[in-house]
Image (tube, rainbow, N blue to C red; front, top):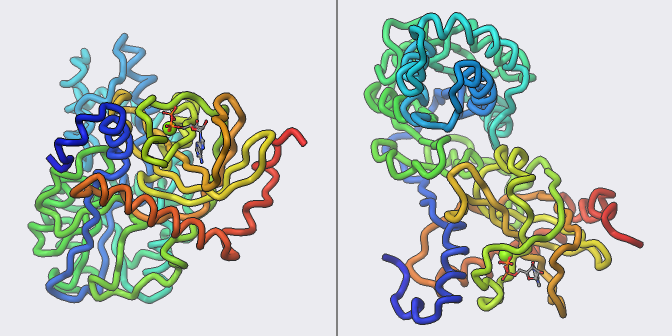
Length: 409
Ligand code: ADP
Ligand code: MG
């Protein structure tokens, strides 16, 4: 237990710590490598492309036809599996009155119509561009059938050309967790396994990469599962956290003032009561927005600490630092955001319209040995946000109309 017992003497403070704590649970671990890497082998679904939420949409509708309700059960078992294996697990988990093959035949056309909707995961476009522009040979090794991979790539500009090798699960005898697919990819790249770095979101993929004699960076796509990835050489919160230089690969050069400019995204709504756990007592109040209404926007974002601008109706535009995380009070499908406006207000502003433009990433959530260490880190985040937001790539966003539309001027 990392929390010192004395904090439990103050229920509000210990509750506030719990609020803050969920913002900081994942270990960021860019462990040093044993050998420099020259080639990168990437998984597609759940690593580069968010096909899971698209697939979920189709499955929900499909199960409803059988009178069943999609509840995410068995998600982790299916992750990274070949389609027919995944189908067999769904038939079993939901006790469907059909065979896995029948299920596949029925559902597959709906999947194919939906791939155009799959979006790149946070940091995927940046990573592909970076490695490609630095001449690092890349392979795409996915358990999906080859034809299917091509369909998914069709909608992502510049991706297909960036990979020297593409291999589908139907092009090898055994899919992941067998090492075959990665060994075959390395062979086609004319690379030795120890000089290949694998980037994977699934446990079967990590197992496959390790069995192929490669080092593996895991970017778990299922929430709160990071602790299961013990086999991986390092576990990252999201692709933003990859430090290629630690693997002997060219470093990213886009970080500025301890933050990473990201494709801006916009979110807003009335300020609601948070969890009433008294973050204010710690001097770190967070103006909560409804997680229910914003769930689809938040689902697309990686957990972590971000910076941006906040517009508050009737008041003005402020710098802000915020975290995105899985709140322990909600069921496991809800992500919440906790924006701290970097301004001293004389009063609360519940009910007012709050607009946020999120422009930079600071760090993943992390575990801290003490409350003091946690608070110190949050203040460091604040300092980073305050300084960075004055810089050009970020400062221009304080003028976006979105922030002001809610202002009654
Ligand atoms: P809650 O659990 O209701 O979110 P907090 O202790 O996190 O309570 O306090 C957040 C509230 O404090 C906000 O909804 C807002 O009304 C008020 N507040 C005052 N100053 C700030 C600030 N600088 N940033 C965010 N909220 C603030
Ligand atoms: Mg709050």
